[in-house]
Length: 157
Image (cartoon, rainbow, N blue to C red):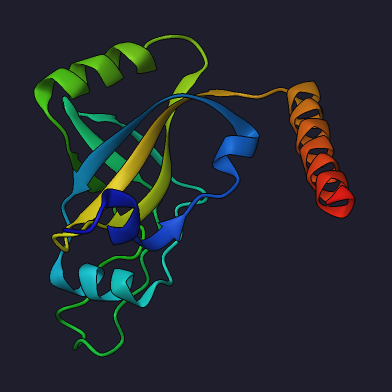
């Protein structure tokens, strides 16, 4: 059986999430999709860069995630590209996320959409706090130093 890391097949990633936010906690959630959305996700052209998760009528939803229309499907079988999609989490996890959202400055950011080893679409959600400009500069300096340090160690042998 393949490990979780080997089995991940990313459909979309939010690469800027760790740069723009401090990620406190990461959670895996299922996502309710239609057939054409799954087909389109497997094509890998989806985007979660501007997406966010939130509560709506006591349930967790993914808002503003872009999953393009599946062109091979007929006109009737199409889906709306930016519709809200319900996320599937356990009640205890939902309560924990709801308590986290109520804190000032905390939001739910989708980190990635992928297919697990069983072929189900999953969303990795991070409980995040926004970074200020000076925090972003600091993390950029740290990343640059790590890159230079690795280069120096490699050159020294």
